[in-house]
Image (cartoon, rainbow, N blue to C red; front, side):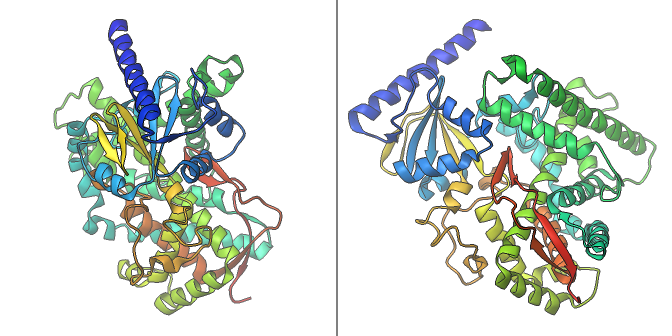
Length: 491
């Protein structure tokens, strides 16, 4: 085992030397000057994370300084940052470039406790992923999603009730916290059949998910994090949080399997599909159990955190751009009037609100980066890239570059008007190709329902003095929490 690992590392070092040689001989791509021989750019990235800064801003800076292809060295790894639309299309749209095995190996476990394992997002073997994807597809069909509108409406109404209380009492609303609760409420109900009512009830789930995400970032960006004495209390918290999520999943899966075996009528939701992924045998293996829990944790986190952050950033930009908010409210008034129950067909009529949500993801993609392995030599934007390297694509970086979007820091939903020129492979908040996000339509339906109800009933403004900084916790979220003053629109 040790000899095979040594051989693999030696192979990577050989590729790194090959890259160094090519770079010096033919200037095949640019590199930052402050390179440290052994650790490369790892100390820079660790410091950005430790200081609470958004690492993707550093990638943006490097992209603007060094062009469409630049190199990052981190110990024995070489990562190529790419902002070339043609290469983005070539690599992300093709199944022959797999996900980065080294990256997802660090998501398999978190400090010794299994985390995402080999679930739908983290599976790097194409056949294993494809089998899971086919089984999960029915839970995201248009027919099934139409049937979720009742739950979307019901859970969003719980949030509206809470905001009504805050508006009546003139108390500040911590919007990201509230949105995290309602999106978690939605995913636990529609995906797993559990009625937690998290808007009104305390739960260990939000804290556990946040702790796991913070642990994920630490584990990814600092290879020595777990060996530092000062980090041991936090590592203990992360392990306990991971174990809590998986133990909960084990309990919910067991109850659903019992219901199925007893011939009870169960919903064809994500939990049912997760159980199907283990096969039809009476006795499932330990491997089957682990895979079911991998997907439970994957869908729980992906279905909650990303949508909550998108909604929180959307509220931030609407509050900062009252003309956009007014236009969105007029559309909502025209389509919905005063009715509370939003239909699936109503969502299709809310075109400007859809543009607002897309523009939010341009500036604040919840999951901004993705990477692919390139096994053989390729050419990107005229630069020769050796095989054995990792290509990194960052929709946050692309979305803030003026070569792709005019005045990129201006919040302008008309960029996504149906008649506007569409960006060419530089906007991919849900990834691209076969490995694009299975739940993207689900997420945008949920986001539209929540935002439409919010715009229909309330005016909101940001409490002065809070930061607009972005917190990078694996997903991007507003650092301030988006604290708002809420008032009824009829006041």
